[in-house]
Length: 81
Image 1 (cartoon, one colour):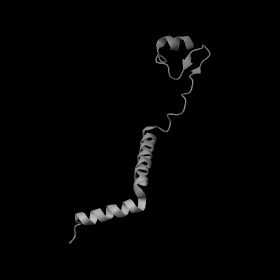
Image 2 (cartoon, helix red, strand yellow):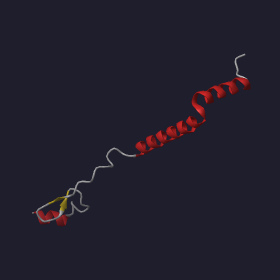
Image 3 (cartoon, helix red, strand yellow):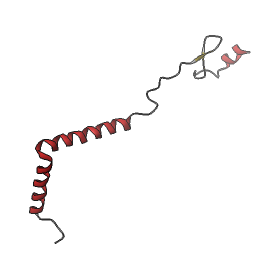
């Protein structure tokens, strides 16, 4: 008594088709798919990805500071002394 027979499922399917019609169900599924795609795209995007990187700061000698690979070399230290 607790399970549905095939006749129950056929009656439910007929009622759903009468309520929503043949044309509404595919359009509804298309809208759901578009919503899922939009959600996935939003999850992949990083919140800070749209900002542009800041340009490097230029010191008095005309060289960038703060991010150069050789900022701590002895040649740079002697030029500042």
